[in-house]
Image (cartoon, rainbow, N blue to C red; front, side, top):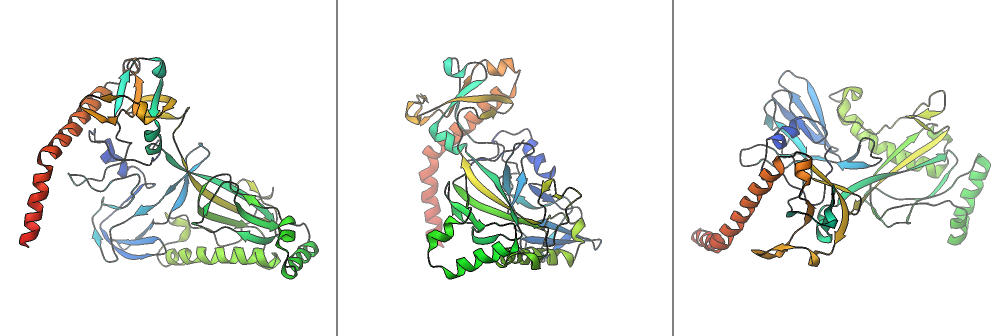
Length: 392
């Protein structure tokens, strides 16, 4: 249920759910099973050894995680402050995804980031009829989500690769991410490869290829390759692409293999071995036949707009309009700070959501009191800090 957005934080008013969430799933945080120490950090892998001599692994790489049946992926990456030799206690959070979980709070607990701090008005007009609500264009960008879509290409073993994009490369919509000549026999493949080597006319080569283009403007975050034929049977250019991929995959496998059976590891490493299709020629539900499957994972920013859903605790609403920030309402005490979101005043009563009023009022009190204290004492605190630094 957690979809990270651009401007995200834990709630100032908590029912302790935010403190429990980091311990409920290995997807966003890793909890130590026993006392132990860190023995190795390499190739985006952290290996820990528990007090009983057993080992565990933590994936520190950025990798796509499927958002259930939403049809898209979210890029997850856990970070750690521990170093090789660091000791820890059972139950301690060893690594966590910073976009999803905050550093320890005032009480020393890691807290889940559950949303965006925003100014919300409860009102009654045509823009907030029933379950609808509106947001400002400024807030729409703060409420944006980074979504990863997968582009899948299946090639025959005779395909000649002219160009392939790299992980980390920025792409525009309709930019080519893969250009190739794909044929059904070895003779045609060799002929096209020799033409590409001999001719100096780039337009002629491009005309014979079938470019795969990106549908989105974003960044290529990950590339996964699955092949079902021996490397020796591939065209030279395709073989080089696959070999480069398997070399990178092998590095992580070797690190894990020193401590843990790769099949029992928490980390799902990219396979460096040839896949064996089932009786229908499928691998993981996709028909590859005798060929190579390349998955490009492209991350782009999806700005909130009409039809998207938002929620204020359990009070859900559907965005019906995005208005210019200069047309948004404001309070008399702070006219420069616009109202970010407008929702129906009867929504909380219809849904019988009692915490909206409590959390809203208490958060408002905290924010306004912080503003008042900053304006009253902020400069005096800065002056005192300068004096202390001068004495040192």
